[in-house]
Length: 479
Image (cartoon, rainbow, N blue to C red; front, top):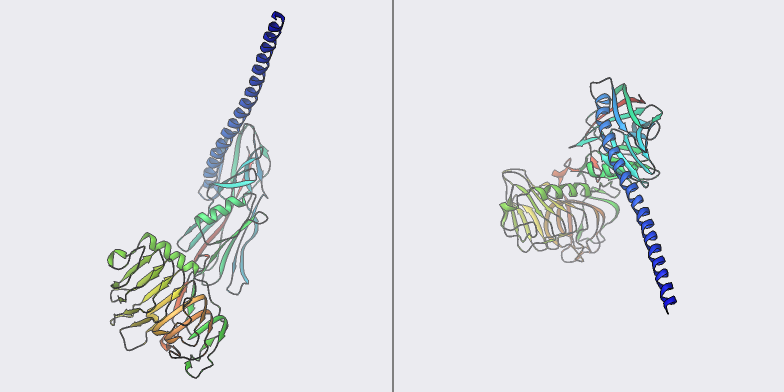
């Protein structure tokens, strides 16, 4: 028995020693990895600060008054600096409304980059901005020299040339080569401006375009992203009916339609216009000036005067609404559908030509509705509906009592079932079908006073009117 207990003691002691050694090894291994990870993180954070500082000082040469400058980068530690003259490119061109390239302002010009590389992590100065790539995913550290404000784009393109690299304690020499303004006649009256970047940091550039300029931005494909900026469009209301897809005319003597019908109209989308109006109205509106409207509901039963009124919800009017535009126009913006069925909307102002514009990010229901002004004339231009969705989608016929209006609904497929009612103004839609007759019939008249009347539409792309473009080349070399 003593011998057995002695063996057990020895075995227990050996197990304790083995566990201690194993735990120490694991602790040493994980601790070493943790220290390495912290060290890499610190070096990458320092690299971001150093490249950002380089960006600020290099911009003084590229865009400022300095002809040259020597910049103390500091220690690269485990990484190195690489100057990549042909690392990326920029392309800027203008496309006309027909889709043809009108002017190639910059054609595949190299941007170049100054890159800190440490293993799988890169921090780069490119196009005046600072970008980081880690595990093949890039982000923006600081924005490039690309400024969009209002409808003006100012893009001083910073191009880097040079070669070589450096490690350890590093100084970089920056010298201005030339700066040239790229002339383009302003204001831009038609078409689109495309800015294309091909870069290893494509996702970072795309993030920047989306956050700072919005509008139409492509996905990164083959490390290439394009931002599209478009001139505002003006739609001239010269037709009583205009459709993009299909128009089926009346087959009944009870139905009347205007003679000036465009069955192959080019209709511009209005989501950009409505989105812009919604965002602005969320920030500032005149809801507090009226008793029957709030951001969550619009019941009707009051008079709306000059200003912007916003509802962030579907609207079903339960009462009639009057408008007084004598002191200025009225905008009604609905982030949802608008149902005016059976209600009367009347502009009481007879002293001015101010009107009411409705921006509807949904469907417009009009069955049995009345929209007019308190005038002997039609005055359709004083009641304009811009609708992103459908028109008269809930009923089997609009059957309006009287609408003196312009309806611009490029996505709407309207089926009147022969009972549109009396409509005086203009209807612009994806398609319009008028069949049969019936008790209400269909009487669509073009308001001749609309001839030459224009509606300004912002496309989904960010709008641009002025373009200021320049090319600024610098040479970077290890000192």
